[in-house]
Image (tube, rainbow, N blue to C red):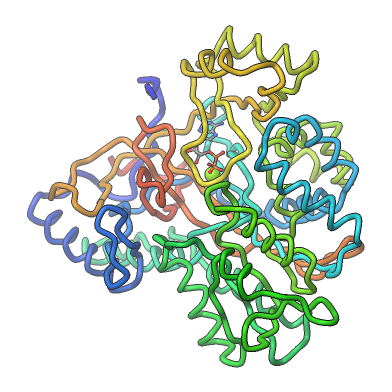
Amino acid sequence: MSVDPNTPVLRNCIRLPLPEDELIEVTAKAKDYAIMHGAAMRSKSNFSEDSLNFAPFVLVPSSFPRKEFEKAVALQPIINRLMHNVAHDEEFITTTLAETIKVDEFTANLFNIYRKVLAHGFTQANSIGLLRSDYLGHVYEGCAIKQVEINTVASSFGGIATHLVQLQNFVLRELGHADKLPNMPHNNALAGLCDGMVKAWDIYAKPQSVILFIIEDVSYNICDQRFHEFYIRENYPHIKVLRRTLTEVHREGKLGLNKELLLSGGLEVAVIYFRAGYEPGHYHSQDEWDARYLMETSLAIKCPSIQYHLAGTKKVQQALAQPAVLERFINDPEEMKAVGKIFTGLYSLDDNEAGNATYEMALRTPEKFVLKPQREGGGNNVYGVDIPDALKRMSRVERSAWILMDLIHPPLTKGYMVRPGAEMPPTIVDMVSELGIFGVVIGDADQIIHNYQAGHMLRTKLSTANEGGVAAGLGALDSPYLIDSDDEDEN
Ligand code: ADP
Ligand code: MG
């Protein structure tokens, strides 16, 4: 992706570049600090269950406008409630996804589970959402945050992000900039998310029951997951945490007399936390779909339940960006306005008049847009000039599996990205940062029992990369250094 040469650059936390010998020394220390504090992942190219690489990280925290950070934090409980209301609106989910499920097999499979559960009635009325709302600043609106997407399933990096603040604090202190630390907001993501799971466990109210993590066959992002598990085990030692793949649940899971989810040895599951199951590759055969359905019909409290999973689809996000639709879920006019402002243009590609107009618009000015399918996990979108070819390859009906979104233009920051195996010392690069705000919401169709914001994460990528998935290998972990517009320039 090319970057407009006029893109504003946010002022840095400290003056760069660092003298080379200081840079080499602090980078080496920071790498070891990262590994020793679990800011780490399993290597994809050199996989071993017995070792870790540090996760890619940004050496000095990237700047983020304080006002916009605080806005995102304040909005999270409203977004939590919005998503909870959306998840419980059967009519809305059904009509919004009607065209999409005709052509998107994966979403159709999820929707079929939803339909079957609806037909039999929900065994468990409560859901827990561990959400993450992602934002980029938009330079054409004074760096105001715009929502990239909202994640309702496997919202990751709460664990590592919490520890990354300590890593960057360490680096700043080593560099003699302890005075900067107050501008790095404290991050309670790990505690907030895990306490949420424990609150759900409390609602289930059976002392012997366990929390089940649904995992991929191979977990590269193991530290982030283990941080959640170990936090629960250390702070709530009476609650056992199990890890199983969908395939394993199919093999050993069954329902008890009251539809309790039972694993081998008769262990009863109170809460299911999905860190897998959000992409087609996690379902090798009908077995895994059967396992998902089994869990969905069980008494366990799901994170997410199937209706929450569907509420997190890009298609639902696109529908919500229409003011008339948002009105249905948010009563307060001030809240409505505040949420409306974080949405950028999102357009339907359904097989109808509006969808055809979107199609024509995308062909005319593709450089203004991103084309997105109903997928999670990065690497699925089509950007700018590649859009016309992609669209032309689809039939009119096939297009309804996708949505079109305005491209957001984030401000640049300059800094050092540190990656395993990369040349030392790192060089200064142009980067952009995406802020994620975590939220926890627990309740049923009638009421919300818990609703709070729970920490944040920052992911930073090269300004020239379309996407910056850390797990996918393109981004780096970071945390925000909050700047005010009237701060003195450090550059
Ligand atoms: P996924 O579910 O795969 O994470 P996202 O919608 O988050 O899908 O898109 C992946 C990445 O693509 C984002 O993290 C961001 O870097 C980039 N991206 C997505 N939408 C936009 C947009 N509207 N403008 C600019 N970049 C975007
Ligand atoms: Mg994303």
